[in-house]
Image (cartoon, rainbow over all chains, first blue to last red; front, side):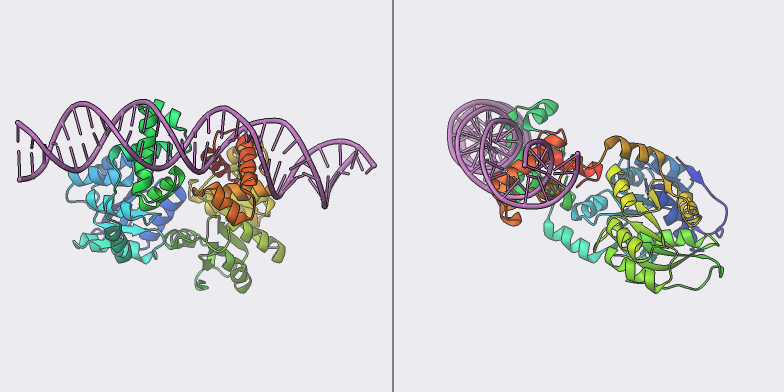
Length: 213
Length: 213
DNA sequence: CGTCCCGCATGACAGATGTCATACGGGACG
DNA sequence: CGTCCCGTATGACATCTGTCATGCGGGACG
């Protein structure tokens, strides 16, 4: 899905791409940004895997990316944009202020990281700041991300934990991941210990809230 | 939190209350509704338990309620509004199109039920329709709600399942809920059977996606 | 090149979880 | 006043889950 509305806005207006899967929220954010005379939303997409093409097609200056999207995540989209269009500024916008998300967003090359419960004024402000070359991150969240340290889980552990997250049993996990049942249990066991919890369900909860899942 | 902005809008404009915990989304929705000449957002709150007071204080015609909010849910707020201010129209707006949510919203006296991935235009449309005495619900979702039937869990089963949802062990649940450990297991067992799943984690997932948790 | 650590894997064992039969008091409903 | 369902409880049993000792292969480092 790609919407064009190149009408309106000053000739010098910042050209913004908005990527967010919930139509109502996306269009509402567009309305909000539309109130700013120096900002123009020139493209909207509802899927992560449509971001790059839309950014190219509409000569976008700033991309505003939600994280949770079908197709691919905003983080992955950010990485793609960063390598394909290095000039483009990237603002990652998310519901969840998870330290791991902030870390991944920054590693993917984001210029700003905003949570949706921040005041709306910060959105336009962030767009202007990244254009001016600044980086915008919530200091509290940055502190949390640094305090928590990096994701302690190995790839395999994360994979198994993610697969286990909706309640699948060890036998199913073993089949799906082509592992022995015992191996699945070991990965879950080490994940449980690394996360300092007592069972897989707590491990899932904890990994989720850190953005490590 | 209560914001007043009685300025602007026609004298005959619909007076709308907006309840949504994420500031950015809330203010964006306000901006969106603000574009409609016949609609005026006269109050905004970020918590469910502030809805009733704000509705009273601002002579609101229509309340737009998100479900997931601190304080109390939009469903609970709707029930409170319905009994205290029977004239008021209620639109429930939610991220998740869960059949159980629709059912509860309707039982709580909502006049409309919208999901956030519907097109933005439906929001203003719904406000106008409920004012005209119509009810607005997504037909697909209504069908799903009817097909699924009502929540099969007893109060106690739901309570135990909810408490178990973040990974607590039987012993902890028993202590917290003042039950014997065996009783906890029985409740979880019956819940697991009613939901046609194979363990507590799947039961939690399933109950959640139905809006039964 | 040996050694050490890490990721990965396996199986044995103990403890947690899920099932089932059974039981009892209380409220609802016919 | 039976009958049924709910909430509560117990104990026995089977299965699942978490821990641990152990082993293998590869990369890092001295």
